[in-house]
Image 1 (spheres, rainbow, N blue to C red):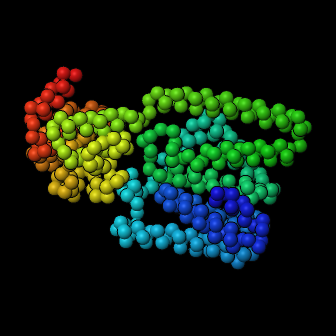
Image 2 (cartoon, rainbow, N blue to C red):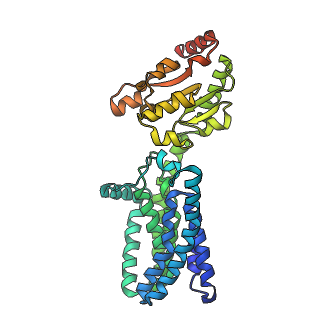
Length: 382
């Protein structure tokens, strides 16, 4: 919608103020949707600025709509930031801390991530170079139209967001989602422009475009198809697996041990929350501000877990067993007993450290130790 309204701007001179306000409101909605979405506020100012350079407009006529746009945006988004500070006590969202915070400032990582993105769809990198060359040519000939400018700016921002965000451990470029549809649309517009501007015979131009399109479709489809099949066979973190391991299983623990009004601390809360009868605490920190800001061998974290939360159950695995490292605090072994645990091989493979992970229950919550022994024995028999 931001792109569409920016495209409309300037067509109706009597409605420009209304359109500027609409674009600013939509930009604010983008910023409210995701923290990195705030960069999309730059689409309208950059488009106006680039157009003014190409048309050599008066600087006053250029700055007036930009300031109006930014003013409305700041009023809306700034009001939310103020609310968030007074209500939550922080200017930043909890995900900022839980996801590691900050941005990637290493140029070598920027180039690597850009290369991986452009290699993800076969011939995409060659098309990217071709379209960039086309833009340089159109810039020199002053034939760049507003739709091309808008799309180019939006694509550039989506790419900047992707390379600046911290590395994503999940596959398929989810942080680059806006990039692909906008880039494919730009491909279509560029191809149409080539068809209109070229001096080649119409039939030859049409055949050439069809051949290039089929080549790209075949190359990218083969890549997307194999990856999609592999991902469908083995999702990163299946919802049903989380529900089974951490929802249903801990419900059964609670029933077997006679625990009522129990709670659990673990990193995978999606499927767990959907099915669990326990109060769920998020070890990943996405829904817990204290954990988000203190996880990582911080004494504040241990005091919060063992003195404040006091979860009846604790589950750790992989990265989260390493990040929490509960054995670093003596209260863990004093207050909890293992239902099922083992040295986590995934941690050892990456760090060389021997750390335990598994399922744990608070000792003072267990009234039937015979039931606990039976559960432990069931794991030993497996």
